[in-house]
Amino acid sequence: MNIQITQSPLSDAEKTTLSKVGYVAESERAATVVIADQEVRHISINDDQVEILPIAEALKKYVWVQELYFGLIDVNEAEEVQHLARSADTPVGHFIRVKAGAKLEQPIQSFCLLETPQVRQVLHNITVIEEGAQASVISGSSVADGVHTGQHTCLCETYLRERARCESLSIEQWAKDVDVMSYDRADVAKSAHCSSNKVMVSPVRNHCSRTSTTVGEDATAKDQSIVFAPQGTTRMMEGEIHLRGERAHAESLTRMVTAGGTIGNNAMLVGEADDTEGFLGCDGLKLTSDGEILSVPALRALSEKSQLSHEASVGMVSEEKLAYLESLGLTEDSANELIVQGFLNLKEQEMPAPVRETVKDMISAAKSGSM
Amino acid sequence: MSDNILKIRDLDVFAGETQVLRDVDLTIHPGEVHILLGPNGSGKSSLLQAIMGVPPFRVTKGDIRLNGRSICDLTPDQRAALGFGMAYQKPPEIDGVTLTALAHVMRADATFATEAAALDMADFAQREVNVGFSGGEIKRWEVLKLFLQNPQFLLFDEPESGVDLEHIAAVGAAIERLARSRTANGAKRAALVITHTGFILDYVKADTAHMMVDGRIIATGDPKEMFEQVKSNGYHAA
Ligand SMILES: Nc1ncnc2c1ncn2[C@@H]1O[C@H](COP(=O)(O)OP(=O)(O)OP(=O)(O)O)[C@@H](O)[C@H]1O
Ligand SMILES: [Mg+2]
Image (cartoon, rainbow over all chains, first blue to last red; front, side, top):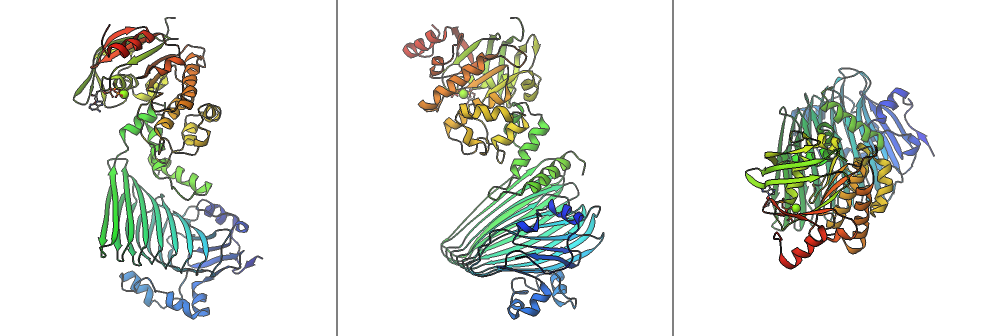
């Protein structure tokens, strides 16, 4: 089966742009959704276990989606959010639903694209992985060729229902004068498993992200982020993980590299219920005298039967590792680059090959000062 | 052969504020394999690292020369370019970098494919360099690494320690094969091998042995005789 819900096919230029952030032929994906500027440009579905609608339609079609809309994000959280919640504009964003019990064979792919210089994109996305369903989602963000200004604000609410499993990989490749504000909330219900990987290595002017995940009874949430800040880039991340149900488990690893930009990472792990377990790992590498990394991992235990730990480090590339590679004949520059590439290598989930290449290129370019 | 002679003269080396080598003299000609033995902490690894130019070792007196030219001011990659390579005793882990990826940046993909099998490391292609390697696996990788690098001057720091009996023959044979082969332009290689056990002598025909105690070379002589002497008499000059 192959249902095309939204009309306009993607142009070759759009496909080329998106391929660097994970887009592959739609025949190899369970479903595809692309939001360009301020419209849902394209949706295609290959697997009828997946439903994708523009959020405005989903709100009309399903009464229960109204409960999910601002179900996890507090409208009073920030002025900007308040403003959006009260806005009279029709909301733009995607609604993705994976039906109960579905075991998707192929990933879902989802993209947002800034196509017009100076455009302001404001999205509200809702994703629901229903009871016992298994899905993987690859999402990418990018700008069209030549566009380097714009604003992107995104509210994402993700619901993993009981026993659901979701693996996600998100890759962003904004541009040097783009400002990004993202609010990500996830609710991982009883016995569900969520694993999320984020690649944030391209230049952007300002990226503020606020994430919060609630982990239910016997549920697991794992996340890994790789963050790179070249000169001119500021990334501020605030993350919270709440181990809310008994025996909830979470592991969060963040690897940060600055080559002149600023990175702030406030990560808080809260043990709310008995027999919960959580780990925060925050490691930073500082490559040049410019730039800054502020890493603040925090643990908060509300239950005496909660086991929480963190490891954090910030430093330069180790002299010993450099010497090891140099003694193999690599120059200092290529030894450095290899170490940074390795440091920013996602462990569990393989990055699609073109994304891996993009990441490599971005790091080399930033380090050779050509960005 | 008068070409590419490594000459160490009257060498003092410090690690930070600690003196680790004193008045060391050593000459190695192409085609020769030398053994370095001595008690723990005597300065053997320090000498190899000083030759390779690895921090924190600093030459404060004397010289390390290749064909009469001092290499003390050169960086490790410049020394590697002149033909030095070292199998580490305790190498660092290189997170996120697979053996395949490293072989690739060394432009040695083909060599990796053939030599990994000889050291029973074909299954390690996608493993990260030294990450989670067992003691013996580290040693096998460090030897394999020198095949990829193909240096003329081979420095081995306890290549057999921790290697199990099945693999030790492979490691010994690999060292012998590498040490006795010629470089791409037909030159003879030379090796300096640190060993506590002398086990390596079953596989590699060594020319000379040096005994190091307290940062000094206190004796030089026939390798087998020197091991016998250490067994009966400890680390003392004959
Ligand atoms: N970075 C360092 N800073 C201070 N002292 C050091 C440093 N590295 C080595 N040393 C000291 O120098 C001395 C010689 O060390 P070295 O590693 O060369 O010994 P070794 O002969 O290789 O011993 P082993 O047989 O145990 O490997 C030791 O006392 C050691 O503690
Ligand atoms: Mg040693």
